[in-house]
Amino acid sequence: MLLNFTIQHLALQKYSGQSPIFNIGNRGNCVFKALSINKITSNFIYSNQKFQRLEILNSKFSHSLKSVVSLNRDDTINNTKFHDALALDQDTIVKNCVFDSCTSEAKGSAISSEGRRLTVDFCLFQGCEAVSNGGAIYIQSVGFLVKKSCFANCTTSSFGQAIYHTDGKNLGETDTVKDTIFYRCSLKQYLRNAAALFSMTGKMAYTYNNCTKCECKKNGACITFLNSEPEIISHSTFAFSSAPSVIDISHCQTSIKIHYCNFLSNVATEKSALVVVSAETMISECYMEKNSSPFADRSVGQPYQVVIFNCTYDSLGTPLTNDVVYRAGKNIEVDDSPLMITLRGQNHCYTHPEDSFFRGFNLNVFFMVCGTIILTHILIIHTNFIFRLFSRIISGDERQKKRRRAAKKRNEME
Image (tube, rainbow, N blue to C red; front, side):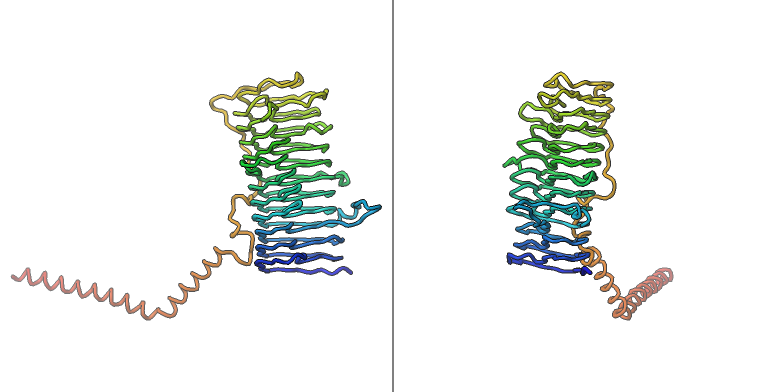
């Protein structure tokens, strides 16, 4: 029988060892919660074996120098690493956590996951940087779900400034990114490579997200799908980003629908288009304002058509090819405004980490409890003093009233 264990309410400061702090062997359910980990030079959690379930909850990790969570498989055949289908039964759940200023000379400064199903829910990745793929998260050969999270100021010298996903042949499942914010996933003084979200192979859905002020010098600033099967990009906002394109799906052979999205003040560099595709594409009911032109184009040599249907725009520009068709669209009028797209549920970008990441140490609750204790102490210990003080004040007022009445009578008698 596999052993289960739980680690909770752990604080660790300035660990300089090279070995992983927790090396998970052949285990059952592993739970880490309410942790505060700062300035470590090794992996906090490491595993190259099978486990049933790993949960990391309500914790904060900051200023680490290796991937905080590193999960890989060392199974090899003829010196070639492989991942079996059983790995998909091994769930990793990271929920309500903060990863602040994590760095790695390899891949995935916050999370590097191979051969396991990964769920990231209501997490903040702030200032995460990796040298290799995946500034914050690296995912290989695994189904994944990222929701209600925020990636801010994440970067890499390679691909996937926030998330890098590869080899997603996961038994036909759809990988999903939803209700998530990508903000400034680039550095102006040193433009990096492709995309806040970079995905190779596998089915992908991108819904109810916001990508703002992302920049790169290759591929798409916000999304790049390479040999993937993107099912839909919908109910999302792409704003103030700059790159050869904002969405690059020029190496995908399946049809794609881009529906109900805002495109605001984006710039396509190198005389490219904001959306570059290579398969039949429908762009419908989108709002497009102050973008560079052309807006959409298909990669050279592809016979497929791009249809822009029922969109509102100020300018679409002239496509580089002749296979972009505009239908039932209209120009922006005075009363028009961007689509109302609201991320569903609370998002970590709009909360203070101190209020949420560590349930055992909430500063607001701490100060409220301290204030209540002090007030109770004053009321219990000093009640008699306070009573005498109020009595003096009241009696003093009464004596003054008596003096005034006596003075008034003397004045009347005179």
